[in-house]
Length: 183
Image 1 (cartoon, rainbow, N blue to C red):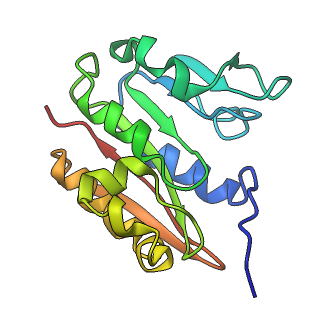
Image 2 (cartoon, rainbow, N blue to C red):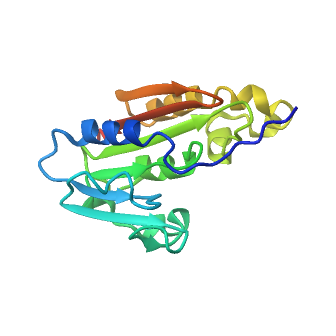
C-alpha cells in the first residue's frame, strides 16, 4: 500500500511557537524574515520589531505574495536577525543559500522545520551534496528515511556546530529547531 504525504499548515502550532520563543529569547531586537509565512499564525502572537513574510499563495496572511525560492537571491539578509524556514519537507536549496550567503549577519537565528519519512523525496541539492543523485532512484526510500540525518550532516559541513531541536514522531519524523550562523 502506498502512503501519500498530506501537507498541513502548522499542525503543531504550540510546539512551533514554543521553539520560536526559545530561539529569540536572548535577542536585543527581533527582525524576522519568514520565508513560508502562510497565514502568519506562528508570529502573530510573538513580539517582533519587524516582520516580513513571504508566501506564494494569495490571500494567505499579510505577506509579500511571491515564491521564496524565486526571490531569495534578491533579499538582503543583513536586515534580519531571524530567518524562519518552516516549509514542507526539508528545504536543502534554501538552507544552502542561507549558509553560503554573503549578506547574512553572524549570529542570525535560523528556525527550521524538518519533516520526513520514507516517502518524502529528498531535494537534488542534498543528493548532489552527498553524491548519491545518480543512484537515488534505485532505492529512494532508503535515502528518504535518513533525510534528517543528511540535514544535520549538511549543516555541519557548512559550519553549524550547535543545533537545538525537539522531535515529534507520527507518520513522519518531525524536527522543530533552530541554529545560529557562525561566521
